[in-house]
Image (cartoon, rainbow, N blue to C red; front, top):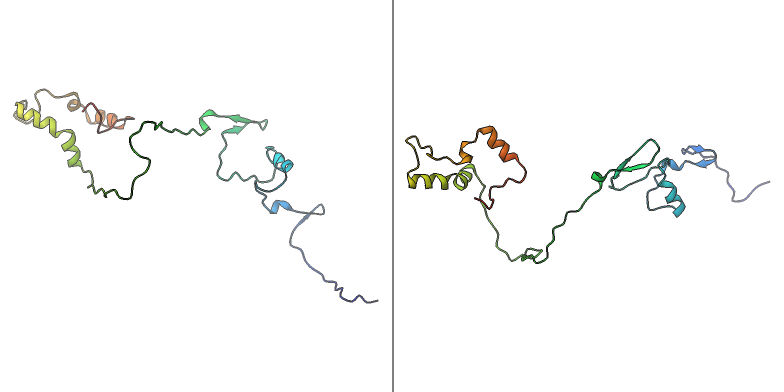
Amino acid sequence: MSYFGLLIKRGISTTCVRHGKRNFRKFPVYNKRGTKIFKQQRMDPNYDLPHDKRGLRDVGYYDQNSKLVLVPEMVPELVVPDLTDFPLKPYVSYRTADVVQTEFTAEDLFNVVYAPKIMKDFKEGNLTEDGSPVNPSPEENLTPEEAKNNADKTGTDLFTANR
């Protein structure tokens, strides 16, 4: 008895078999595949197939009962300013001239902050023999620690409106 065209070959499979089925844990099934029922099953926290979030973060944590506890601080919040009646355009034209600015040095900072007060005191004659002011401003009486603490505060800026 011969079968023409039927060759019996022996092969070795390297895929492990589980209960007569293929092991699909080896193949990651991400969010875009599967039926609607399969996707709903994946939302169960006890579901053991990998769930690819693709860069998304949880907005809470799971408690002992596998329920998601929402943490309001973890919910992303978009802070967008209201730009109605804003005079500038939302783009920069390619025809604008290049701005070349040198590095802002400690000398520049001194000239912006302290030099006007020193020149004013010198012109009015409010300096002592050693060059210290007769009537110092509150900023000039600060200790180095107080000055550093004031500089580290939130919202401090060199160019404020009251200077």
